Amino acid sequence: MPTLTEKIIKAHLQEGVMDKGSPIAIKIDQTLTQDATGTMAYLQLEAMGVKQVKTELSVSYVDHNTLQSGFENADDHKYLQTVAKKHGIYFSRPGNGICHQVHLERFAAPGKTLLGSDSHTPTAGGIGALAMGAGGLDVACAMAGRPFNLKMPKVVNIKLTGKLNKGVSSKDIILKVLQIMSVKGGVGKVIEYTGEGVKTLNIPQRATITNMGAELGATTSIFPSDEITHEFLKKQNREECFVPLCADDDAVYDETYEINLDDLEPMIAMPHSPDAVKTVREVAGKKIDQVAIGSCTNSSYRDMMIVASILKNHVVADNVSLCISPGSKQVLTMLSENGALTDLISSGARMLECTCGPCIGMGQSPITNAWSLRTFNRNFYGRSGTLSANVCLVSPEVAAYSAIKGCIADPREADFDIPAEPDHFEINDAMIIPPEKEHPEDVEIVRGPNIKPLPENTPLADEVEKQVVIKVGDNITTDHIAPAGAKVLPFRSNIEKISEFIFRDVQPGFKKHCQEVGGGFIVAGQNYGQGSSREHAALAPMYLGIKAVIAKSFARIHLANLVNFGIVPFTFVNEADYDSIDEGDVLKIANLHELQPGKNMTVVNTTKNTTFEVAHTLSQLDVDILMAGGRLNYIKMGK
Ligand code: MIC
Ligand code: SF4
Image 1: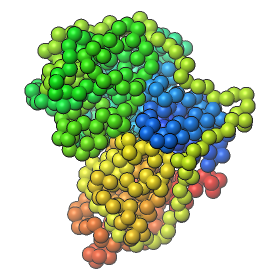
Image 2 (image 1 turned 135 degrees about the vertical axis):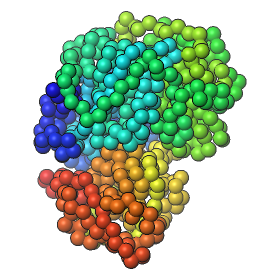
Image 3 (image 1 turned 120 degrees about the vertical axis):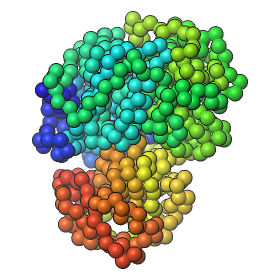
Image 4 (image 1 turned 30 degrees about the vertical axis):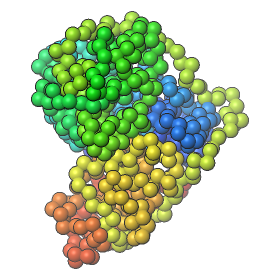
């Protein structure tokens, strides 16, 4: 009676028992990194003294930080290329495509575990892999052959029935799931898709759903591996990777939801949260300024062909700027060979590189007060680079049809053909450089001046008495904590420099403030640290002297990153205590060396002369890591 998730975990279990919520450790078969988190991951791998990776496959992608407006990004790329060659890692060159799209096409396999230093690694769940996002340090540990530590997740079943109507797509399925479960509804859970409706979705459609499952806060999402998976792998010349996989018929789930695809209609996530979901019908007619199509959620061949079919013989409306980034060179080549690229270009679309691009604020920031429709997965405040912009998340169908209409429009009214499935995919791996097998010791790692050494932390003190340097509300994203975009990303390998941007749009001058008061505590509401896996949102605060975050609740990856860098993640036992704390209050936490799993601690608010209780979900391993001042220190101690 196991679920698919339980089957894959069981086959990879190295430590712990599979009781919901208990700490387990699983073997990782594959890893992936991208450039914006990869430089840190490889610096950490080097710091661990690892010569050759111990995984079955590790791939380093360059897709985020590709705008080379100075030497920094090019330096990072060169470092990544050389470090990969030396240590047994495949290197996907800049322009080859978005990590998740390329991984799905060329490497992901059913039944395998994949750990990626990017929160959308669950994209590979579309092919039946157990694929999870993590901080770079956890991925470095996996490359070093260490198992990945997590809590045994609960498993949620989303049963799909029926079949999508024309103009409705798998993006609408995941937007519907977000409407039902919210951005924190998936924390501690894996989302498994089952039911007859699954058979109506091809692999890219499934991958759109598992990709954006990240926005639920879920550990991952997964589809069964079936005949459709088999066909996809065959067309990618990778039939040998196929294994059929599914949950047992009588599998027991912790929660079950049912979505009838026949009844689904086009959906839209309104500013500024992926779960602020409405039907397109409710907001149709609203004038828009920009449409951006692409990202790891919606840049497959299938998506681009639908877009081309809607745009064919039309021109983008005068008031709209349309940009399109195909997800990979494979997709772009196929579009160019079958002529669909001409339809995109003729519509007036601005064609961009096969990279993340505007999704991570790398160009194409919209105009002031813009309404921007994007096929992406995140519309967090400020992420587009224009603070006043209203960014909405939609399917490729809604995006393309709205671009020609000039306003939010329902694609069920559009006249277009649904493109046929390709009979093969164009295979050309020339942009993926294999590692040096014969003489890796001869490969020289190139480090430009932007590659700075990792900052170090000291072991946890027994008593900490410091100020609350910032108090924030619910659903603070890592984009709030450590913003991205073209101006900041070049410093991902330079913590001193990137720390200047911490909480940039929430509390300007945060770095200076921390330096003046010698660091301190962060107080936060629900779901603190949702969104990306960027460990800079923990590493840079650690560098600025943050010792603990006290929140109502945490997002999974950020919680792990805090522990990895020696910042204690506490939760309020009584949420009302959150209200009694003000920014600037001095808090004292004593006896930190007595921290142990399941044991609450007392915090004294010396400014208000009050006390309150805090809890945590730390395992013994987490406690040991915190005591050492972070995971690297812990590993260096020979653990
Ligand atoms: C994102 O979508 O937020 C990112 C950029 O891909 C991040 C990783 C990063 O910050 O480098 C993610 O999703 O983990
Ligand atoms: Fe890149 Fe956007 Fe996907 Fe993150 S969500 S990996 S920035 S395309």
